[in-house]
Image 1: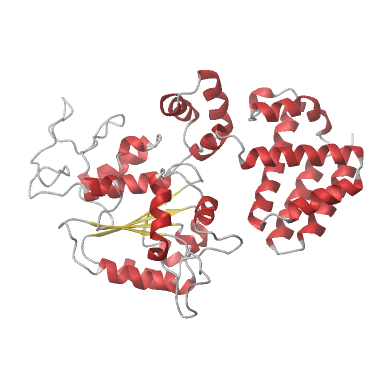
Image 2: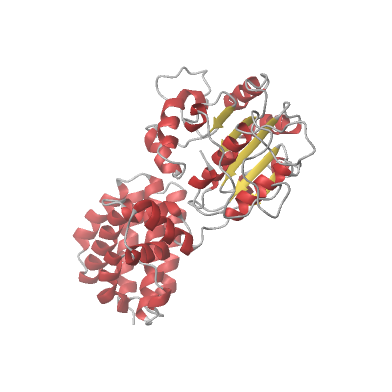
Length: 406
């Protein structure tokens, strides 16, 4: 994977290349940032960059391919490309094994589940799901945990990184590099390591094998052991700016300027949300239908139909239930802004705006905060494994009361 495949994040790309160029590459890096900002894309591109380049015995601080004494193109005003211009970090030609992410010195670690076919003593490791992982990441490095769980058939299971994975990493990284350069270990969502795995990984990071670079892709760093956080160099990855998302939608997806502008605002710095907005039949469309149904039934006080609505919600997995409640909170915010004629602060799809045009007047200063509290309590109850039918039926009944407040 090349740098040019990463959406935006030129500043982080520059920083990573500069660390190598100036010979101050730490053995463990942690990329932190919101979902959809491109952390995994950066990690994979940087891993491929390291594996495709090898420092020669030279006084020049640039990192060159092993079969080349110098890059073909230098900035005209620079004798050495230690720092490349942000718009033109060079992409080296990649061998097929890097293009297919099948390099023997590139190792991926990710959360897994225990399948019924696994023995009682077996601790699941990433290699158990190598085919599913390869299929998913070859579709593109922008994906969610839910997409990964669907790919491995996790249903309602919680995916974790087990102690077996750390043992497997020790074995793999103790081997000599097959190509005579770096060994790269990309760990996706390290916050999902169980405590036994985290302690073993800590020891591995404290005493890293020769020429090994760990790249962690983390969304909730506070859930990691403090001792691990203190031994890695953290790089915060910001949201992608709207203009970059807009231009990428036009260049890579071929959509119109107007559609790209609306989607980029709605995406709010997440390429994943931008891609989701392009797809028909997405989860957000389903959530919008459920939101509209809830509000209409609540306004009409159709208790029996609201019970059926709550049963529909209860049939979803708990993670999906929480995602709906987060969607509910977002729609409250958008309708509140719309109600007060602040359309420039609204971030809605065309379908959402079509509904809000007539509905927004029902979300006002009298009920916005109670509705927010109601949704947050429901999220708390679902997280604590409360009965979902009871939670959502009570939720729906209270929406009736709050919706009519003026």
